[in-house]
Length: 363
Image 1 (cartoon, rainbow, N blue to C red):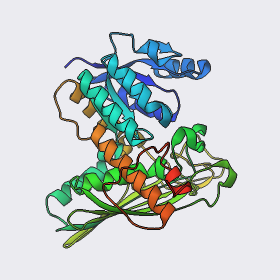
Image 2: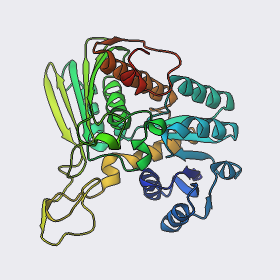
Image 3: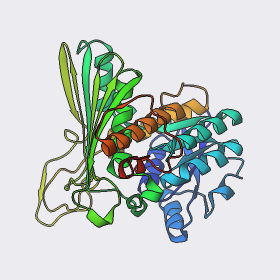
């Protein structure tokens, strides 16, 4: 199979994850270009990853006939226009989560890619995280009987990029940033059932004026068949990334912590270079991880997407996946705003960004 040629839009943390992960699968794919509007960032990024071409405007990159697939790591508000432009240029699209900001954008993205005959792939790496994949395999084999409760939590000290503090660019706070992971995970783990209802509570506790959004969120999702998903998110957790799942069934249960168990309990009085994502210090007791990108599932995700482009595999996470998540995000913010459970489907019109359903419940 010839290598899939990839262009990355963006040059910050998530773009680094993608470029590093692609290099871990060199027989499948390679990054041949990167686009970012900030000259120092994009030049440094290209040099760091050995990428031969860089652009300040992604539309210039889309004119390169060698590029087959675009990986979008830009701010949320740009996901839809970049996807639509890429589809019109005949490029397959990998879009980071959340898919976009509004349901109308989600529909436009799906429609544009369908009309162009290109793939719209939703980058949910939890579907590929080794521990979580093993848990789902056991569940599918009946190890836990009828699964009735799935919990996913992601907590850390706040987003990597400054734009996420601006709800006009991001669409929301911790729920928008982290909740999309847990919503997708619970839905996927349970076999992609219909969502019956959503209940959520949000708050702003620590960051205050720095964010207009939520930095604590708990979302409860009821699915057809009676199973429940619980998603816990926080931007107020210092000390590094906390990502875990719990699965409960009629005949058993399992627990998985994505990074603990893949870490080295370490004590250092002087500190060292890097421990784990979001860890502010390496002095004292820390838990430096190894094979971090593999534990997250990024290389496996990108390999799967490359094989989808070549027709070797069928996407397990696509634009429709992102749309399901987007609708649940709408319902969660609306539930927090009204203080009641929201029945699904829930498709309000004229919403500029999901968080408005919390801040302006009259919508």
